[in-house]
Length: 156
Image 1 (spheres, rainbow, N blue to C red):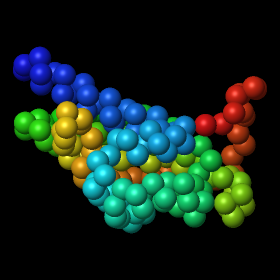
Image 2 (image 1 turned 60 degrees about the vertical axis):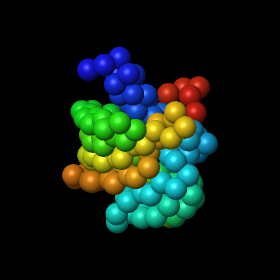
Image 3 (image 1 turned 30 degrees about the vertical axis):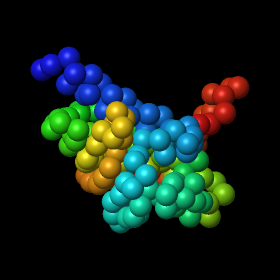
Image 4 (image 1 turned 45 degrees about the horizontal axis):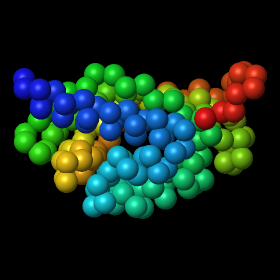
C-alpha cells in the first residue's frame, strides 16, 4: 500500500468518526460537512433522500430528534479504494434514549446494531460521502429504565 493510499484511508476514516461525533453532539454543521452537496441517504425505512432533507430529519422532533441522547461505537471497517472513489462498510452500535417530551411515556433505551455502506468520492481534494445506505441488523428496545446522570454534565 502506498503512502497516498494510507493517507486516503485515514482521511475517509476521519470523516466517518466526525459523522458519529456530530450526530452524538448534535453538531449538525459537522455532520453536514461529511457529505457532498449532492449526496443521497438511504436509511430505510426511516429516511430516504438528499442530504439537505436528511439534515432536517436529524433535527426534527418527529424524526431522529425524538432521541435526546445518542452514542455511536464504530467497529470493523473495510475501505476499498479505487482512485478518487472508495466503497466502505463500517459496523456500528448506536445507543439512543427516547426524549421524555417526544410523546413517549416510557423513557426507553434503544440499541441498534447496524452497518454503514458508503461510497466516498474525492472532489477538489476532499473526501466526503456521496452515497450512503444503512443496513440495520437488529434492534433492542429496553423501556422504563431509570437513568443516572453524571453530576455537572449536560447530556449530549
